[in-house]
Length: 233
Image (tube, rainbow, N blue to C red; front, top):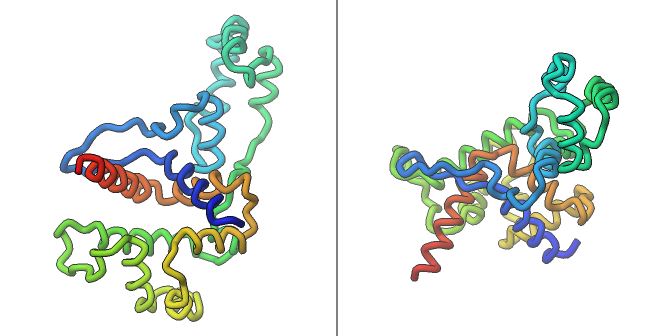
């Protein structure tokens, strides 16, 4: 898998994440900012697959509206002119909504690896390192590797941290020390090992970001602010 393709997929996945401003200068941001170029139905389908969430009401709500005639044949005809996926008559739509559906979206990297309890552990580890890296004086302990990038800071700290090995990941610190210095190449290698098809890279990476949506959005804010500062200089 070419690193250039991975970089393009990373940029596309990150573009979908809206920035999250800190409380000190909180700014309301459209949570779907990175998806505004998509039709509503496409954005809804994407978020169901990558974020495991719906921006539509549950099927039971639409069924109730149909049975109460709050959604009429005329409504369906009008909607069908705007959205092809809803070009159904009333009975066909009822049958569709009554079908039992299960989430068949994209798995996280930890789910692919089938490591029990890994999802919660990884979330805790990411939160731990992001919180100390982006600390603004609240913590009594000053993180010693804040001068470099987040990746370099994590790599320096993780090479000393025995917590993953206690969790059950053998030789974790040794593996971290053996990593290269390019996060893009490391991500590309991991994606190749997992076997993610190139056509699915943006959605797969988007899924990973949405499992830590708070930190993803905050890092997006930091990236946005850094970009503005560089432009102003």
